[in-house]
Image (cartoon, rainbow, N blue to C red; front, side, top):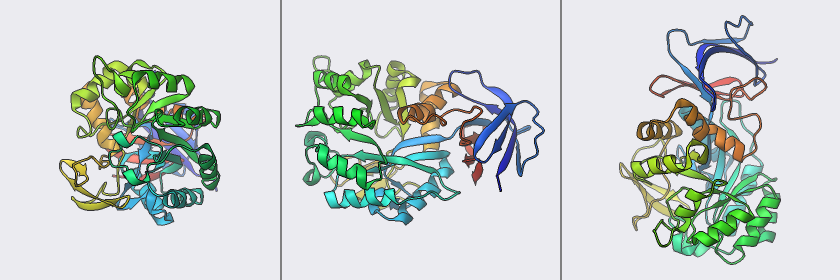
Length: 385
């Protein structure tokens, strides 16, 4: 039996459009009609009258390692299901399961596990895989274990893509390492996002990598050569490259609030992809947790290794949206760009990141303070406050 849903009296927000009050009729996971005062009969009815609710496209997190006590590198179906189930509480309707630098066996186990995964009805959609490392710079390793960092291999990646059933959508790479530039060309040919990250590249090396196909920068500012007026580094280069969208972890731990504001001023909303880079401690109490065989201490100051290096975050997309709104005073339409539309465009998802007829019924319903009230995936309410 087809599932129908009618949402009435909500303010619909898209990037590049003036928000408007309207109704939506959803059938079998797709938006069928958007209008005023729809009278279609549906199996479920949500009325936002007198609530001042905002309806935005569901958030897409392109860079997340774990949550709710689980991690992609656990390489279990339970881990992926628990992650997908927990993420809807923060308005996320789609995500990339992100691996990290580990042994080849551990990475392949995680890839094979994702290849077998099928979403349940009450979960955020697993949209693919983001391979972060092992093809990174040892100078900018951060929480990526040094002993497992290796040079990029086109043959190895082809094998990994096959094991994942071609679900790898993004690879973080340091272009300056041996074989990096040819690897980036291969990623472009394979229609996989090449994202510069954990890189000590010069501005000239970044420019060359962009010409070859780099179109994203992994967690801007963090573990990349910083800006200096005589050596602009990766940070300066990606600020200047219009083709490159930058990931931002807006927890104000990974970057000073005004550094986030600076990125917004330079790149604009169309140049930013909000991510969490969250690890398994997200949603849990402070304490010690595992990340790729390393102990991470989580406190009010963030998630850190024993040497003080940041090791992911416990940020939610709900809080990321509130934080970037607070520091930049951006518009709701710009929030849509940074939280969903840009990610959908990068991933070439032609029916996500926008609320329009024919698009997927993936939404987050917010109150005026941007608190998540309901999350709707594939036309089904999967979370309610």
